[in-house]
Image (cartoon, rainbow over all chains, first blue to last red; front, side):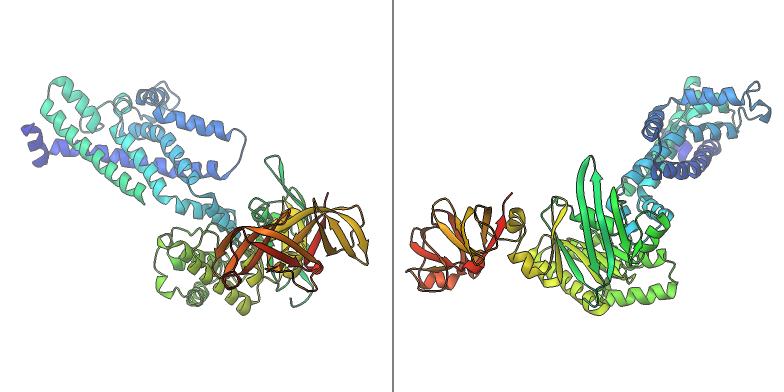
Length: 221
Length: 363
């Protein structure tokens, strides 16, 4: 344990590099997923169409999709024999990002829809009565739901940074290239390098704690 | 009323929601510059009607005309027309933004320039007496303040028609007085046409020129307040406008429009054109009933004796219930009760004039 804390306090280059990479990958996936999930979630919320309820149910079911299933799906697509094989994405950070985007999209989209649904319907009526057109009304509702929607983004980030199966499968856990906090913990533990694993685990827990605090703060708004 | 041109007119307007007819055959004319009160019990369809007038919802049937143009269907026309009106919903909702931004929303949505928005919002803040509140988050305000912001936000756009849904529901008396004062200011300053739903009869009388009574989704009566209060068209409306004495009977004789009504064991004289044999309700406002300890020699055609069964006080007024074969309620001053004096069990003579009886046909 002392050794583990030393590794953190001394800003061990390898530990910092792994933590930095994890944060960067999760943040990138999260940013891309946000750009897709919020507009798509809004389109689903603001429009009435056949099968809307079913679609929302499917999205919600995908919240708990196992990371290895997403990993397998991405693997099949980007492996040499797959449809996107010629892009050479397998075992690259890009592959991890693609996988994480797919993993967190449902949760972000679903929570975006819930956030928008949570806005008091009288507020929409008020906007319409004040002369807002469809887009102005939608913009107002999105603005009103901003904190809940930010919560959706943070939840997505939390899921992305903590997943392990997907990064292992499509990232390959290559040292200095695709090794993340979770894959490193998994590997170092199996090698018996518990100090490094604990140090990485503490960092991961710390990130989780920060995410949780931010989320709580937002939910109180 | 400045002239007789209707700014809003509806023809055979109806709304069906969840398989139930919430509104039926609404034919309404709202004239330019008038203050029109929609009264009716909770659930009578007032809010649904206001939503149709503001073109928030589309009706299941019928048409809405604005300045003579049919604006029922086209979405473009509905938006354009809605932008000439404003609607303050019953539940005061404010946006999660500053008081200033809340008031500015409607103007921004209409593409008003930043400078004009600024001037207009400042004027409105001054009018509602909330200049010092402009930076505050509107969500942090009290119920009454929120409602003032909601009304301010509505009038900021200088609407031709202002629709108010129960503007003082759930507010304390002080806040209610402030809101009424604000509405009076709007009426005087802007000459805006106002349609307001209320179940508060006295508020309606204080603010409105004309009244429409809504009952079970139908307009049962429109007209002036005197007519509404004294000549309701049916029993439910009579009860709603506060007539406590509604006695069932049948017309037993009629001469020169003075009818004699037979009730269970007494007769009442009234002025009415009802024919002999017609089943009716005789309605007498409790303030029209005069109480005496001995038989009065007066022009009142109806006098009954009975014992006081209940005596309750509300401020300076006492409500006296008398059993004269049927239950009769009289409103007298507290002073009269003390001076006469009146008490439970005491025998009294209750009189009212034949002209004080409003007769409603039953059936």
